[in-house]
Image (cartoon, rainbow, N blue to C red; front, side, top):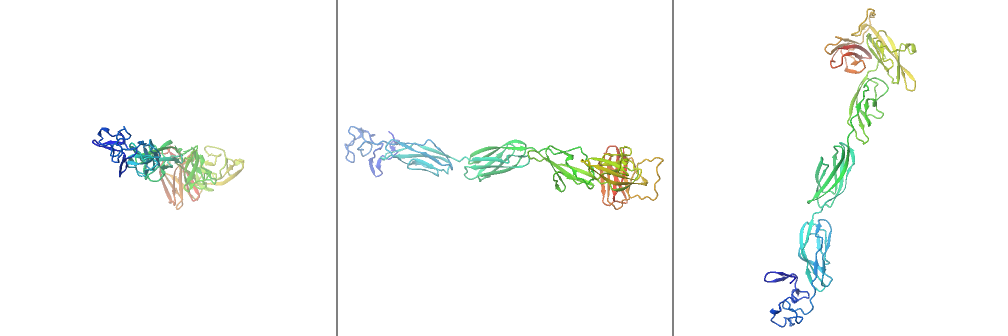
Length: 523
């Protein structure tokens, strides 16, 4: 027997076997038709006076009334094949019926549906669920004759929505170490807030958001191609997406060349590129900021100028800065008075490609030649007079690349015979000092050679004047320098030069347009 529930002593029908709640006659598809026990019958007619067994010779119906016709067919209701829905996602499935006489109508026989879903009389279960969980229903299907059947239990599981990630990318996709990068994406399928994790394995950032537009900035580290993963999670569901970021290393800081950074004052700007070596594009800056290309330094006056330089490689990455300084030796005064046997350095004020030095004239007979014991640098921009014995005027012939030339000078060197350069050794033929000669600037070394690396000297004749004193090696490099805004009448100098290599040095003092040089012996 079907469409009954066995209650032990009684059988309960799954659907009503009667015409209506107030009419106990059996409907055409009642499960009670032709299911009784003829042996239990005691009357020939039912309550309506109809034959108790219909058709004659058949089986008696269960109930007080005998159905007087051909029984109908109970429809069979089939449940949908899809039993999983997602919160926030539209859902639609059909219940169908077979047997009986169509059309059919459907309704929920037992159980309840999640919020957002409903069953139409056409058998379509549809809507957008907003509630997760497991829901069990049975559906009653009724045909055109009123016959009905109930489906098996339909268990619908509604899961939380899985977020989506689209358009995940880094902006920019390639950059330099230490530069900021922004990761962006669109997060979809959201119901409220979500948590996220952005990582490349070594760098991890986490957070929460309700915005569908994801944006997170980080500072690039490491180098090479890196894979970043973005994971978005909500209500136990998660999605992940990956993107690549290329991090280019910074180029090394520029290296300094061997070109001497001690130069003589000159009215021609000094190109800075010669002091630095790097394969990339160089950028120079000074105390006043960036220096425009081509980078040069104004060396018209003496002093120390500080610079720094970086290089930019083909990827646009900028290196660390390399600092360097240029020491500009003060320009040679047009007229200077020195003690006899002083070492004097004269410098051309014009830059050229070739140089010639002349003494007391500008024609060939007055041209100087290289004599190590008398004058050096006769073909350079700097002439060294090793031991001045006579007063003279000097000229520098400066040639340009096109063959043209100009003369710098006269640069007059007056010998004061009343003094002898400290450390100088004069023969018996030394000329007597001129009486009454004035000594505007002098240097006295005590002692010379220096003892225990302690250079001690006294500069006289510069009281109240700005005084600059430099110690130079024989290559013209400044190894020690000191400046007084207002010198004493006898300005004492005490320097420790023990760390300097043994050899000869030049102690040069300059004040009020005058210069004096003394030779220092360091053993």
